Amino acid sequence: MLLELHVRNLALIERADVEFGEGLNILTGETGAGKSIIIGSVSLALGQKATKDIIRSGAEYAYVELIFSVNEERRKELEKLEIFPDENGLLIVTRKIMPTRSISKINDETVTVARLRQVTGLLMDIHGQHEHQSLLHISRHLEILDTFAKSRTDLLKAEIGETYQQYKKLRAILEESEGDEESRRREADFLMYEIGEIEEAGLTEGEEEQLTECYRRYTNSQKILESLSAAYEAVENDSLGQAIHQVNEVAAYDEELKGIQDQLYDAEAILNDIRHSINAYLDDMTFDEAELAQTQQRLDQIHGLQAKYGSTIEQIALALEEKKARLEQLQNFDEYRKKNEEKYQQLTEKMEKLCQRLSKERKLAAKGLTEQIRKGLVELNFLDVEFGMEFRKLEHYTALGYDEAEFMISTNPGEPKRSLGMVASGGELSRIMLAIKTVLADSDEIPTLIFDEIDTGISGRTAQKVSEQLTAISRSHQVICITHLPQIAAMADCHFEIAKSAADKKTTTRIRKLDEEAMVEELARLLGGARITEAVRQNAREMKGLAEKRKKEA
Image (cartoon, helix red, strand yellow):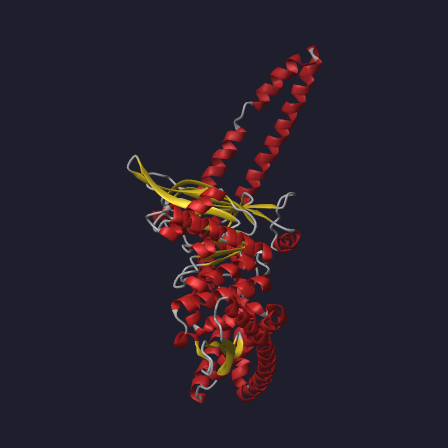
């Protein structure tokens, strides 16, 4: 679960340090106080796109840190991704946002944003204010079903994805081969020309490097001659002989001088070898303009082939084999096409069988998913709701099979189930998404769930039902919820107030954990608005007491 959140210099937040608890964590505050900034800071730490304008005015960077406590099951999942919590099961995620870039780290190891999302997706799920609108997109429905049924369908989907790539590639080859015979003849003629050009060149491995070395030596022969002649003269005119003579005169007087004498003899031998080597090189050195021209011509030929067929001789050889294979296909086109058609038919049959199996598994899983969602909707004050999933077969295969699936709902007895967009209001969509999130959370066992103002468009009895649903979820998950409804806030195990204040011509958002009396006062504010009377406070105390009683009875 999420133990701590630390924020620095983010939007209106100069500094915020929050210690979350188990169960239901509620965040409340006046409109515009910065409630969504708190959730936004968590989203940034999880890999959401960051812009430089979120850095607090006057600050050089913004910083967010999340500290998670990881149980043994999550540890095993993380270790599969080569992420290792410490010996106490703690995992620290940080993100530093600067004007030109951002840096993400997991346990002090810098990671990419994609890697960050992959890891934190195992630890936390955020349901944003407008996420329920995604239910209006039918493609999202199949994604939800596949998430629910992944233990039954993931391997099958992987096989379909791999087969589909082969199927699509072969289909493209067959479509390409629909060209007329004259086009194929022209292609074959051009291939024969290219094959002949490469083969006639007779390229050998390492040839280019050898020719380049020869060419460099030929074009710099004058400089080589001058430099080596000067070097020979310098070695020939050295005064090493005089040094040897002088040391020989005194070597008998001290044993240590014999060591110097030996070193001088060694140096003389080395210089003699150098003189012989320079002489030998100069004697063998020749310059033939015809040979230079021939070398240059051969290099030009090689570079021309490289420009057309590959940057190295090895790549040119590979291109030659590919062109020979293609030429053979064209010269035996009828046989080649027949083989591809047979393979395509086999892949089509395989795709059909795999897609049938996947569709069957999905339909079985859909019964369980929609029934669980329906029960969740009943708990959320949809009294006579019917909820199901309709399947349609696409006219073509995809990497995900051939299914198109859509959630269908009826909220009134006797009415047929229809598309969500035709029936559900914004508030109803929000509750449907809450029911879906509840089901998927139980399926995925994600430790921490965040709900950002899911109570939009609901009130009264429905709000009470939502609060009970959140409480039920919080028995097996840590829940963090931003709300403006007292019915939901009253169920808090931990309650945080978010407030905005101004000082020194700067606006700052702060967050504090409320004790029991402060919780009542915040509930009174939510109930009574601007004017809080003693009667409102009494009502708030009663609401909090009833909430605690319901939690104990549940």
